[in-house]
Amino acid sequence: MKKKKKKSIGFIPMVKTLGGSIREYKKASLLTPAFVMVEVILECLIPWIMTLLLGAIEVVSGTATNPDPLVVKIVDFLTRGQENPNILLIIIEFGLVLIAIAFLSLIFGALSGKYCAIASSGFAKNLRRDMFGRIQTFSFANIDKFSTASLVTRLTTDVTNVEMSYMMIIRTAVRAPFMLIFSMVMAFSINASMALIFLCTSPILALGLYFIMTKAVPFFNRIFHKYDAMNESVEENIRGMRVVKSYVREDFEKEKFGKASDSVKKDFIKAEKLIALNMPLMNFCVYFGIIAIYVVGSVLIINSNQKLMQITQLQSFMTYSFQILMSLMMVSMIMVMVLMSYASAVRITEVLKEKSSITSPENAVKEVKDGSVVFENVNFKYSQKAEKYALSDIDLEIKSGETVGIIGATGSSKTSLVQLIPRLYDVSSGSVKVGGIDVRNYDIEVLRNSVAMVLQKNVLFSGTIKENMRWGNKFATDEQIEDACKLAQADEFIQNFPDKYDSYIEQGGVNVSGGQKQRLCIARALLKNPKILILDDSTSAVDTKTDALIRHSLKTYIPETTKIIIAQRIASVQDADKIIIMDGGAITAMGKHDDLLKNNAIYQELYYSQNKEAK
View 1 (cartoon, rainbow, N blue to C red):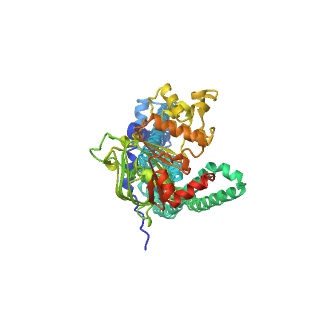
View 2 (cartoon, rainbow, N blue to C red; view 1 turned 45 degrees about the vertical axis):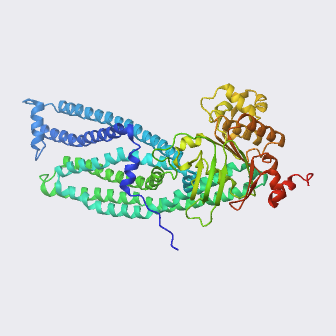
View 3 (cartoon, rainbow, N blue to C red; view 1 turned 120 degrees about the vertical axis):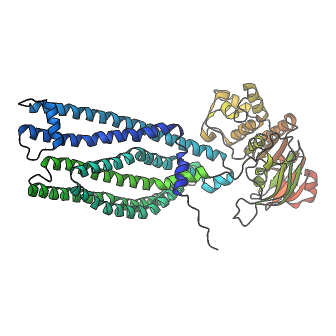
């Protein structure tokens, strides 16, 4: 079976998508090229005025053989009928004009730089914000599609590349073509036949740039995918640093990272070799143009006795030729930068255009009546391409306020089952109902605010304990936070901290133990005052006594909340209203502790292996 080719994003849709992030920086984005245009016009006027000055000196000194009528008029205006015109005075007057133009050019150049920085950095800020906001809407399936490392690369490296490209587009990409056109017009006004020399270099440059672009793009696409893999390796290594050190695998990890880094280096070298052709190509065009202009200009001056072209005009022509050729060089540099950032722009657009696979419907239900849960003929797989279902033929009814225990071997899809309740994933077929209504008909925020999940590997964020607790309820008072922590058996160890509830939690909760982290996460979930509380093996790191105290608190203080407890220890679920046994993505048995202990072999094996004295 042939692999389906990934649909590429068109250039115009990509530009429209990225352009939506400019927003409040449109004014700065428009002012930048406007100031650049004025700056270019002023710069191009300077050589022309210099030509007029040299011509005026020749007219006043009487050395002009074929004076320009415009120069004669200017000299007449400046001397105002003086019999012995003062050359120094004319030089001073022209000099003041040149200084004024240069000063204005400097001002407009500074303004263009200022607004360019505002526009590009603001655009990058909005891009990151828009991408991060989009990622927040993603379902787990969307996150799985991109991978965490890839999303981090897109938010950092790719946005920086696009920012640099945008900076060049609104300033250099305006300056270079405008300078090229204006200088070309001035050059043609001096001598049209000589100006044609510039046109001869254009096809050479265009063909060269086309070759570089078509050959280098695939390398950059490959490089960014390897960046994702390399960042994923770094993330994995840092998260598992304790395991790496305990198994003394530092050398292995360094070697693995070194190979990934070398692979990126090799592709970069190949791409840079192609891009490096740009500079010698430009140098060839520049020097070819200079030589041709000197040769043709000298021949015209000598053969026509300065009638077809004057020496002063050749000097100005050379200035314009440098401006034209430097503009061509800038254009080629812009093309290279845009080339490098194109792959990044595509990757950013993919994130911005990605639609969450889980969204709220129109006219969504805004209230969850109670904590009852019903699974009807549920089948589920993580990807449409997956051949095997993670859950098969699930039929289950949980009444509001019941306590339900779920046990099973690792990989029996216990977590997959409970993740369908708050719509972290959607069923492949069948339905899941909460409060008698299909979860797909609820407003997602309303549904998830009614369901609290505490995972075995839950996360604490950098900040104080109080700040972490208010993730459950941002309006929670200090008393409510303390009450929730007491229920979760967390208050005792918090009181031993120097700053108590104002104690700072490091990123990921690395400065608290696994059991302490789990109890803090349970307290945080309780502050949501949920209709359904899901504990996914979330007391695995606490002792049996603390586990029993937590279960007693839940039963006593939130009797109306439906409690679903996934556990490996029988003791954690044996008092539940019903216990579900899962195996291979299916429910194999269901009942109370005593019934399962009499009739179910799997339950008996688990119970007696954990309670040898009972056997």
